[in-house]
Image 1: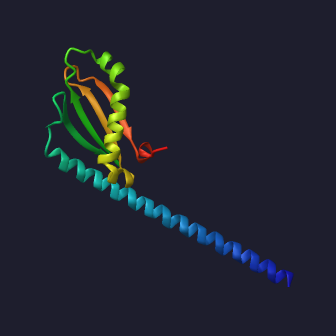
Image 2: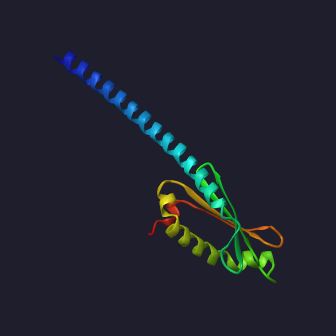
Image 3: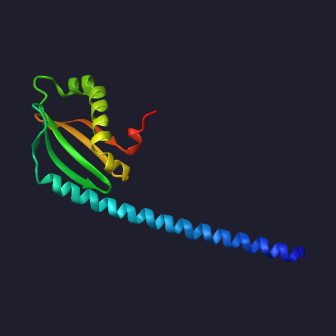
Length: 145
């Protein structure tokens, strides 16, 4: 009887282990398929948005390019900083810009973020072409504590 219970226990653990491995492989395959699909969505979205560029956002900002890289949509803007230096813009406006951009992306791009597609906003100076800001937003950035 002890031998029978031992055999049943060993077989049960072996079957359970195999089931777990199959489940992990299925989950991994699903994640791979999802990543592949997300890369295709990013590519198509960037191509469609690019057809309307450049696009004036406000009196200081122009959306110049949108490109897809892996599962991230990268928006590149140019800012007309006027008389302010690049350094002054970076130091004075970073927190205000980060808060506004994050909130805006979390609202306007919720479907992308929910699908594990990330959004990056890059702001360059229209005059010097120097990168002033870069905000990389994922779904985790939109959680409210």
